[in-house]
Length: 200
Image (cartoon, rainbow, N blue to C red):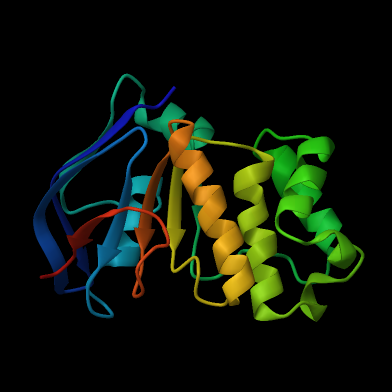
């Protein structure tokens, strides 16, 4: 199981512009870190680097006791600013496909749909869902195929108050079970979280 993520002396640039340099932090089991900073400071880029989607200019990301490739393939989920959903599929087809792809089952997909109040929407095409419903569908993957590290980019933004509370409860449960959360945010998370300002 993934227990610690170490970010050591990380430098990330976009084109000719350096977003941040010499960033170091540790994330351990049961912890949440909220990444704050102005737009364009590099919060999303940091999440992408941890996920292996962006190569840092300098520094390293270490998944303690695991090879980086194994950690990324088997122990993390990333929900980006864009939900990554195929609009022509039904909500159920999309949730089932993504759940199976990441190691869950149809049964766990159904359970996730229940937790996030999606059951009545499962027959609808994704394109017919509202922004908040789409976000809940994307977040359902976190519950349907549990992985230790959640990388979240503005996860609460399109959610209404009721579903923010629901997802807050799910985040708290994830931490209690030994999970980790690294989230780029503008508004505070509804759970205790250490704050790391990016680009400050």
